[in-house]
Length: 202
Image (cartoon, rainbow, N blue to C red; front, side, top):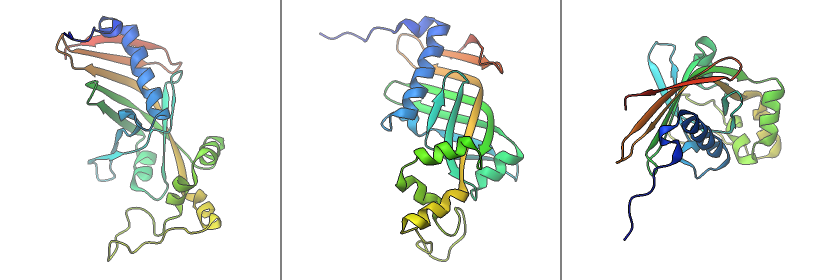
């Protein structure tokens, strides 16, 4: 007869909870099968309304802590982040019943070492997205009225539109739903990456 799974040691340990959250984010960047590989991000629209999208988590730095995703300079989110760099990130693992919410500030990189390294590490099929014409969000008369790049030269031309967005994490909130008692914690990060945490009522 199988009993309930043992509660992990971090269930009542703030430091352990933070370490687990950072581990899951690191896995999300490295493993496309992880539920945290495709988090949602929320920006402030130019009309003042919140805008929500799904992105691919491309990198995570636990020392920052910071995360990185990529996007097209022609997308609305770039103009939004350049006007208001505040950003929220949300991920949820339905199997583990873990939610991670992040608040931070985004920096947009296009013509620097961060963007160049990210572009060089990208796969060919990912690079092709940045050479699509016209740009993302453009209104069309029919569903297929856009052009995909066909050659390596055409794909390379999309580099000018490529942007790496780095999110410096300022606040992280953890929620774990469990029969033995939910756990919710909040962590604030200083400029040097130092963290302070506290438990919250789930």
